[in-house]
Image (tube, rainbow, N blue to C red; front, side, top):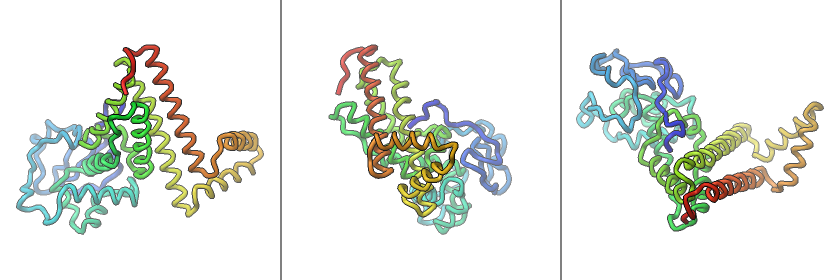
Length: 301
């Protein structure tokens, strides 16, 4: 989905892209889009001047500087590169992702990748959009509340499944085809709420920034548990045991125990699910209330 800030192209120092440091080489490029002039085939400063700030890989309509059809490696294409990028990001995380690691995964040279993308940031933007295809569109015939719940849950699951996408929010415009389908679905839902136009972006922010935060924390907690070899319940029990053992934290531990007992749920996942469902219901109730107070009419299904 397009960043709520409306911006995703902030420039970074050339030595480090928005996604982290990347070793420079022939044809390397930072997030700002400034391409190194070293190495064969590099564009001249005059040629590159009008494009010093790269907005999005999806808006890049430049003519490639190389003959990709005649010289590109056999069996390699942008889709295959993107799929491999997602696999690496899922396995190793954002910090370890690099063009060299990706080239090794594909059994090609790192330079081969530059037939299809100009920068590591291009790859991250392509990978980000590709995983949005995993979000199933809500059924149009359903009530807007049910559609919102379905879409919010799918977005949460995406954030948990691919924890590397959270830090990329706001880094890119996120205007690829899959992301735009998600955005269109969200807009259709908020229009159906009956909220006046000037209130709709606020409603979107309330719901999807909540889901973003919830899914991000959930995904990182799950990854932390996996890294320690403990289940989420085991990790939680050990953490709470450590907290209870601290005299100055005993009061908050007792209060937390009371809250968890009242909430119910036998496992961490069950407790988390109850929290998510209730929090989302609160937001939907707020939208209903504001729609009745300031809306333009009866909300549509």
